[in-house]
Length: 132
Image (cartoon, rainbow, N blue to C red; front, top):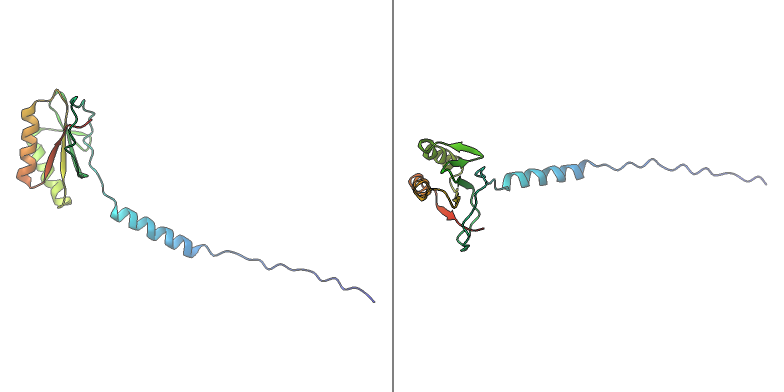
């Protein structure tokens, strides 16, 4: 009796990655759409030594006032006569925008309050940050 050799032909099994890639792209789109983009002021300020907890919200607009009383928005210095227009443009982009003014401890308080008044005139709720 002759023995028969049975050859084992393994099937070529390929994994279909398309459904997994679809899920990954859907999650990517979801996270991009729901992300909150924060506008950074673009200047590092030296903050006052006292630290009350005034900022309780996550702002979408951050404005910095340097020690030379220069106003910074989106890492760009903005002249005082253009700050209100820039804030109005940001308000048009995001109607629910909230703002924070971060002032250097040597900044002119008049400039900080003028920027606060511009926020109020445009209709953006604003807080002045003095935390460390």
